[in-house]
Image 1 (spheres, one colour):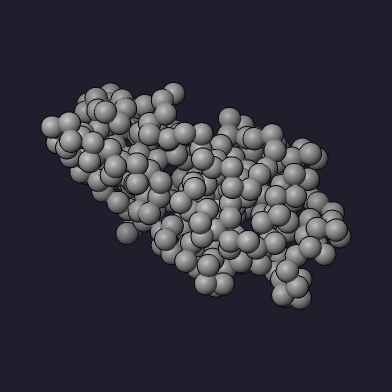
Image 2 (cartoon, helix red, strand yellow; image 1 turned 90 degrees about the horizontal axis):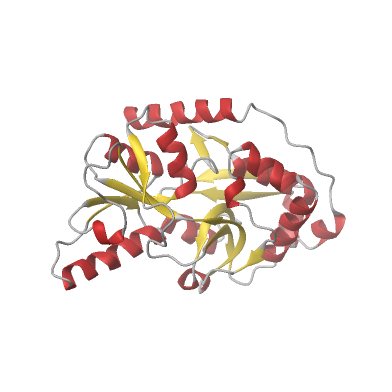
Length: 289
């Protein structure tokens, strides 16, 4: 646990320096949007957004403190809505989704992968696009360049995430083709998953390209990306905020993102955290296919 904490703290410090701690321009309250909030949220004057641990550079959790692009965007949206947005952490995506559906948390800013099976229970307010690749040891000694080369390898993934589902399904294909199954290693957070690769307990970490790029940059030459530019079992990947199914909060958040995109704040925050390649032109609800 101490090593994991050091990894998170070190990453947070470097990312904070990279972002130059620049301030994001404040937003004025949009009364029309505020009036559309559920009444209980307006009366309370705040919402609680849940995350499932560090997902840099979007969400960087150090102790009880959250930084990253997600924090900057939620601050801006809170200003637009005239409320405070607090943040809470849980262990793993299943706990995040169940916490939202039980009413314990109002929403997750994410970004969380938007897929049809998840849309059955939740609505997704998409604000980025993502790609899924592998982080491997420098030199890629196991030759992992695609899903087809992952058969028989030890692949770490985030527990409950879409990458876990894809790699498990591919493992079944490996066996059907007469090849060794994938040894899928599921972890609850990103730092633990990447640490497994650095300590050679995993051959690769299969996850979103944006956070893996940062982990590779901070690995002192120990890691590199593999499988870049390939579908790797995914169609177009939209990621976004998560709200309960049918909640009016979904459309409020969508329109808040639209304002931030139109006034340049979204681009400012995304570029601040090196996420310009993950930007989309318009937010949307349940765009995942």
